[in-house]
Image 1 (spheres, rainbow, N blue to C red):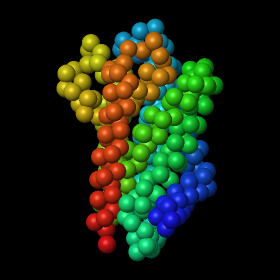
Image 2 (cartoon, rainbow, N blue to C red):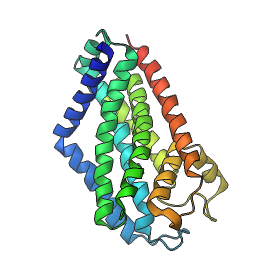
Image 3 (cartoon, rainbow, N blue to C red):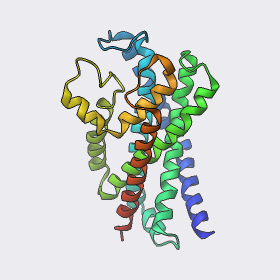
Image 4 (cartoon, rainbow, N blue to C red):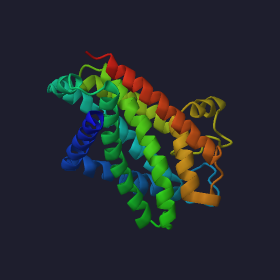
Amino acid sequence: MTEIRGLYTLWLREVKRYLRDRIRIISGVVTPILWLFIFGTGIQFAGSIGNLNYQQYLFPGIVGQTLLFTSMFIGISVIWDREFGFMKEILVAPVSKASIFFGKMLGDSTDALIQGIIVLLLGVLLGILKDPVMFLKLLPIMVLMTFGFVSLGLTIASFMQNLESYGIIVSFVNMPLFFLSGALFPVNGPNVPNWLQTASTLNPLTYSVDALRQITLGQEWHPLFPLYYNILIVLLFDIAMIVVGTLALNRRK
């Protein structure tokens, strides 16, 4: 019971802190809107996306971007907790390091998922998400995405000593992940160089976005990989990052 109570307390703390930060919630909504309405409408896309308009193609990528950026930057809470002494208190609590990591990971993942659901609602307003069942199918993929990227953010934060360093490293990691994921253009198009296609296959976000796009666009989209394969890769990424993140937390005294 002690482990469950500790895990629940950390989860609840992260969710409450997120919900009270209205600026972060609003800014997390404004950015996807800008991408969808300005970038998605104003740019003449040269790639091959069949009969889709670019806004339809872009939407799953924006959902992926929202989950990636929110999940990764939420890891900054580790540094804040360390600065104000809260991390020292929870590390000496009679709760295992694994429960501490899971508590923070689940809390931060809930925050990122809320942000992603808000973006999904934009898809409803745009007429991209027309079927409630589609909405429900997207949620498990989004949950898996947040687990992995939140764990990655927490892992990076465990090695950082200040906020400035964390911001630089996360931006350095986020940009290649996003641009090489197929969120903005097909990574298997005829004009895409081989090195970029190879890099995209090493990117966990590629499989996440491909899964989101398969569910959102259905038969109108020719996926890079089968849906089960995408889910398997994302799941393996989650497991790897949770293990690495727990070990990174264990090294802290």
